[in-house]
Length: 474
Image 1 (cartoon, rainbow, N blue to C red):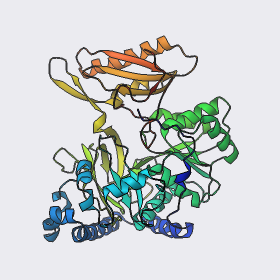
Image 2 (tube, rainbow, N blue to C red; image 1 turned 90 degrees about the vertical axis):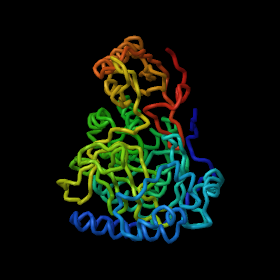
Image 3 (spheres, helix red, strand yellow; image 1 turned 135 degrees about the vertical axis):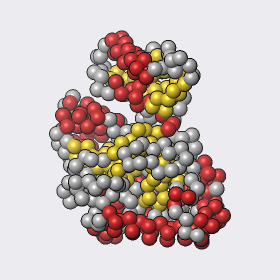
């Protein structure tokens, strides 16, 4: 079990901003102007950038020269290019990266060292993925890519209707290895008085800091929005925040409802990846997550890596980055199962939108089918009845061989035996309706579920039965 308990980052994580606020403001203005493009204008620009990236990759990366050089030479469509998996990226990293001074070992040492928050060679930002797929990778961004990433975050924050200069606070991971730490530290350029808070900071410190700062906009994990709502309802937290941006974890409907009930606030969901360092986001029309297609090409594909019809969830999402010259990613595989729509939103922005997120392939459980064989059920389908169930604070599925185990934390004073029985009954009902054969359902009650990994997230499915629990009882 990986537990990150520090409430403050260690001294070695002193942050060095990429650029100044004026430079980032220019980038943000450039990106915001693209919001007024037509979709044909956007796609024409995307194609132009795509071919510049492909030519650059072949010219500067030995790996891409060998694997896609012939495709670039004959102008093949992107759909014919091979997919790059995370495992392949890690295995071939030193031949993919375009600055020969960089290597996987060099970046790993940098992230583990005393200067992890500082640029490598004074010019490159590095982050690590959380290892959800079982493989941990590192990402490195040149100055241009990073500035566009930060400007893109500002662009979509404007889409929420937040007033210019609004008091913002970001509450994310406690380590510079994680993207959220870097993004929120960079936002300090526009919010120099923003308190340094993390999802692992003791709650009494968070409450005191927020009561003093009185943020107008908060960016954090959905699980942490839930905790803040509890503190507000119990009278310790006293803020009047009206806008939240949700990152890193899946946003459940009950958290939206909770924010509306407690603060009269709106949560704007974001979709971000360490691999692209960019985030898509909802606008005020709540019609899906707008994707920054001027910075990344997104493809929702099936098992054969063919594009799926609009509105159909893909088995995986492929991304091709358009701004990062030092580590070009071409048809890089993300295991998120999303449905895309290219219909223009009522807001007029030209970008495709994520209209549904069905989770990750790693969260799909294989269970015995009634009558023989097996069927696949996404973990969220099993825990969906627990959303909003009275008394439950957190939930998590555990790996098992043919059975279903769920871990929950219960609010103080709630009847644990009654809640345990209700959870077991609800999950068994889902299994029966899905046609699953007779399956054991085990419910474990713990004091709380620990955050894990460099991102300090609460995972929907734990990697092992021992991961993430504290003071459990069955």
